[in-house]
Picture 1 (cartoon, helix red, strand yellow):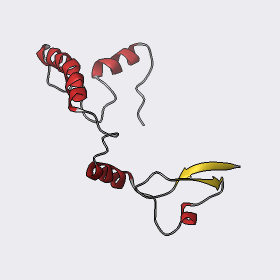
Picture 2 (cartoon, rainbow, N blue to C red):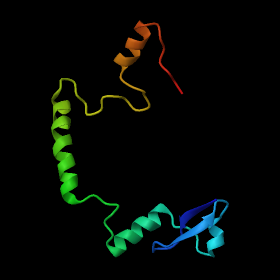
Picture 3 (cartoon, one colour):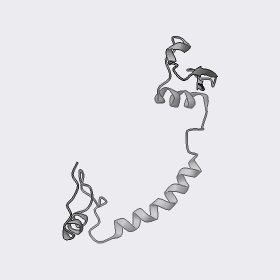
Picture 4 (cartoon, rainbow, N blue to C red):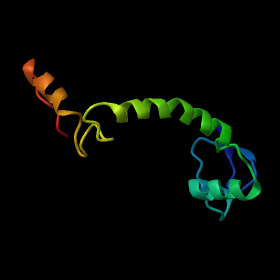
Length: 105
């Protein structure tokens, strides 16, 4: 059985390889890490992995009113669940009321 694999490097070159292939079979060049790919895309202007500014603004236009309401609620601290907790204390109490217990990993 064969599959198509991208050969390591900045250009998209595909090669049919047997399912038991190893990238070392392509030569000395090691496959790029995610950061190498990201930096290379920045340098050549490939915006495929990035959101446009208008997309980011649209997302914040939805999230900001929600965050504002949460901040305006009585007792709001900006953080509803303490660090290293699975949820608010009221959730633990609700489980205990039904005879269940809070899961702790």
